[in-house]
Length: 510
View 1 (cartoon, one colour):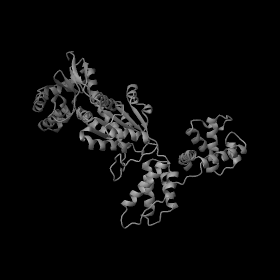
View 2 (cartoon, helix red, strand yellow):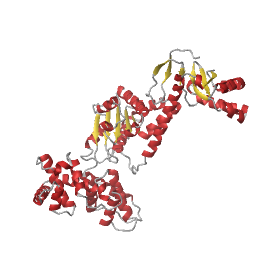
View 3 (tube, rainbow, N blue to C red):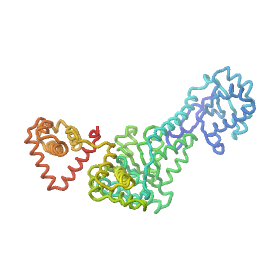
View 4 (tube, rainbow, N blue to C red):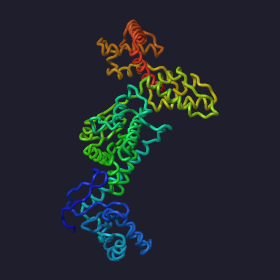
């Protein structure tokens, strides 16, 4: 029977970063794998593997597989290494016939000189068994999470150029995030220790993080900044879990004054990963450092964060990045067309996108910067590599490929109403209602105008779709909005963006 006493054990990796102590009624601790050159108390499985090899050679395969291979390594208890036998009968047989061999084989590799003790599983304390299962469960959880991560991550072509802040294209959609990144890159304060950059795929979040990293490495040296993707973090975490020692990850994270973590949402799937990460975040913040997170969704929408975690992020700065606006899309398209043209082989025909084609792509593709670069590549491959001229057909084909491979059909009026209502924070029912308040009337007129522009429906048909209104109401709305678009460039750009959202709706290709 195990004497009850108070002792200290280390929490398994993933349960909170730096080792913490807890009071345990049994003098036991979980096992850990790793090279035997380290702390022998934490390398028991490696010692047992070496002892097993000796025992197999000494006993032969039949006896070893019958009696020794079935022993289950449980925990270190009161200075002894405890193994579980399936039954009391098996325990007695192993102890009577093989105890001397087991002790001798173990002694060869255990520098601490501990003895091996074998006990029937039903006689082992539930607390000790639970302790062994706890460590194993954390490792299985981490490995399962890695499987999900491997499916979620795909290689992204970052291009031939280094990602720096100097070659980052700035527009209204990313100006605030860029301003924060530039201050961090200069080593200036941003009045917060946690900075979160939120935005959809392909808008440049990784570019900003890499730009900060490049600037700080140049100005302050390698150890001043650490960039990690969520995949990098998870691999390091799993490696630590398997060794039951996360000190390498802890040292890597906490020596830098600025830590940049990309794709933060991917490490939120499992509690163990989150707890591990936030232990590092708190230590960095406590030491005056800065943690910069990049995520595809705002922390308020990540359900796995508990209230304390969410509060720690919300107590910092959150910068939103949007899909690029039309002018920025034009700049991105023009820059990438120039890059493709410059890198084209001397034996290929010259590649040039005229302003007409750039405008067509920018108007029809309200997409991320990455998708816009892909559109330019599609035009290049469909023309220069095929020995064809760059014409409207080639540009239209590239647009189709980006939007699902099928030509977009005219949107339904229901789609126009739905997209317009979401854009202006109202409902379709309110667009169709008789209410004349400006907050409903103006979006309603926009939707009527675009219904006439984008479909072949007549004024009476459109009127019936908007609360059975008379055709003269639709005609009035069309003429009013058309006049506003002609005289107000800001209004024209707003309607152009709304039209792009409508045309990009996936319902148009069904």
